[in-house]
Every structure is written in structure tokens, then in C-alpha cells.
Amino acid sequence: MLDQSFSAHNFDMIYGIESRKGNIDIHSMPTKYLDIVKKTKDIKSIIKELKNKEDDKSIEDLHHNKELLLELQENKKQALYEHLEEISDIVNSSSFRFELKKLKIKGKEAFSIDTTKHTQYLQPIITQYFIDNKSEIWLLFLIAHSKR
Image 1 (cartoon, rainbow, N blue to C red):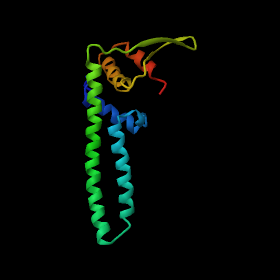
Image 2: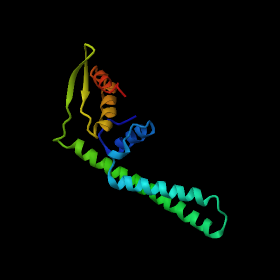
Image 3: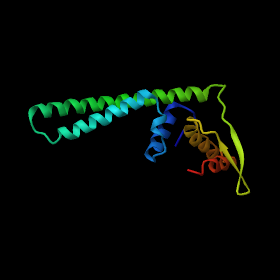
């Protein structure tokens, strides 16, 4: 459960959940993160090739590439967290706003929020807040994101 704050930690939890569901557009991530993802894929393919070889040089290269893969995975986590900290700083600033739009769909009222890169992280926290506080307005956010 989220603690209802717009922290990088909560955004990281949301990123993990949404990423496993396939809801994160990887191309919207920072270049630093994308570069690490590409390098990771390259190293994984090298490791796959080296696993089939049994000579001493290949075994040494395999161990080296496995260590490099672990380092890249840590760098990827760090790059993601830095990105989420930037988003947290933006949404926690006093000047941050997002627009709530009232729509008519098939004659019924519905609501939608803007689709900036930040709303994919904000919506679960906001929804949890309204559910936990037994507010009727949480339905508004569920309706706004029911198109998923």
C-alpha cells in the first residue's frame, strides 16, 4: 500500500507495478536510462553466446560480463530513481497543477485528467488517498482512468 505521499519511493513502487503490466512507455524515459537499458540488452546477448563456449577465455569473459551486467542493473535502478526524484520535486512544488476535465460520454458525465508523464504516478496515490478516506470523489478518479 502506498503512504499517500508524492515521493520518489512511491513513484518507484508505481513504476514497478505499471512496468510489469506493460503500461510504461520506455521511450518516455530519460536518455541516460535508455542507454543503460540498451547496454544491458547487449551484455545479456553476449552472456547468452558465451554460455555455450567452454574454453578458458570464454569462461573468463562470461564472468566479466556477468559482473558488468550487475553493475548496469544497479546503474539502471539509480537512473530510474533520479528520474522519479525529479518528478517528485515537480509535483511537490507549489506551482504544480494538473487539469481535470469534465466530459460527456454516451450522455453520461465522466472526468479525465491531463496525460502528462506525471499523472501515471499521481493517479494511484490520489486514488488510494480517496479510498482510504472514504471519499466519494475517488470514483471520479476511477472513472477518469477506467479506459486502461
